[in-house]
Length: 217
Ligand code: IMP
Image (cartoon, rainbow, N blue to C red; front, side, top):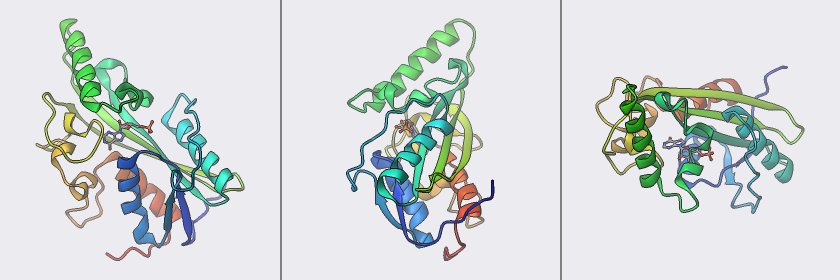
């Protein structure tokens, strides 16, 4: 299937997650896109019935593009902990429950790591994964995956970012994502366009493929 570029204009962000919306808006707006979120348009949140990040991202993007008549970008992402067989994975949001209690979700991960360590597996490696999907109203889709490897730390450190950020320390760094500014988390402080976060890595693939290079740099 041929790749399709996105011309400047309206782009629907198919997410109701404030943290993700903030990050994606900052990533996309420099490319001349007029960003509107699915919640601002009153679009319903489809049930995430997929079994992979890519499948869930695609179903959210397709639903928003069909309902709005505009291209839609969706993010499905999560934390995958090696000693827990990849959990919480696609269920990362659900582990925080209806109250979105990520302090509890991080504590649950830590408790399960403790159980694994008691059985002799003291591996604390993990990765954040992000699948970005861009869907057009005619059904064309493009999907991109970004990952960042690291380790779970305890106790959590830092109050920046969102979700599991304070408990995740990316490989080669001494601070958690929760201790980094958004620009540091995405890897934009060095000016050499070397993305760090899973979302910035997926976004770079998306931008290189689908966006016109209008970003001032
Ligand atoms: P979903 O993609 O809406 O199913 O939710 C993904 C969940 O994964 C979020 O609610 C967060 O808990 C977690 N997550 C995804 N990306 C990040 C990140 O960049 N930092 C911290 N947590 C994240």
